[in-house]
Image (cartoon, rainbow, N blue to C red; front, side, top):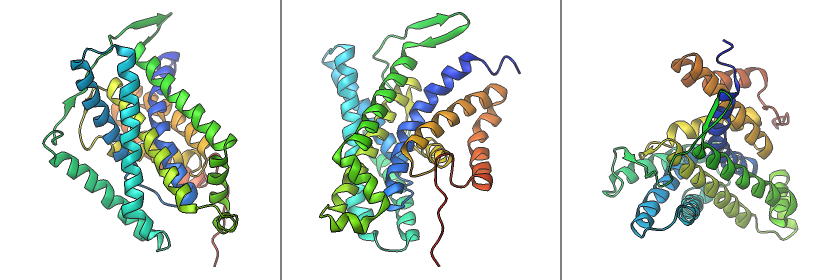
Length: 302
């Protein structure tokens, strides 16, 4: 067992957790404001990966440099993720805002399936796997017995920068203040003259942009993409958000890294253990700590 719990697995887990974190933040932002578990969120991640795929292939044909290419690909993946998230809210969720929660939940599943099947029906995408372009030469680094690559460094660095920017927006800007206020008391927000629907739109845009960025990072690290690639990571990111306390941004980040590390350690023991450990964590959390690590206990009005 001493060979399993080591620094190498910790680095691998942090890299995996960084992808989960970017997706989990979108889950927790949307749930925090409108109490919707947006199961289509994993598909924003998938569409972000495809946006990066087409952008990179186009720019490689123009012989652009690696640094310029990754910046443009990141902007493209974030733009597509945010656009689809915005449209999903406006077209599918907005009219259900004051309907029973079950209606919005079922709609979210419908939006998710629509995005997956519609994408696979587009000839340029198709239902099969596509190899993600590896436009950056892989460089290996060794520190003692620990091995990592420049892909892992890029992955974690971009995720951390985006999370720092998001944290600044939420805690130090008027938009973030409005988002936090809308999660606390929507009626008071309206009385202050703030457009709640605009705040919700921006929340979807931010969450979709982060999920799109996660799609690019996943494409770089696990170089093949397909229209259904968002299902499992989306579900695991949701589990990470529940673990951290859904509705709490910092909790979602921490929960994602804990889940990523736990999953990598599970895979080191056995691939079946690795695949199932996220669901085991979900069951344990719901039984013993349903509010998550950073969530607050809430009572239901009767």
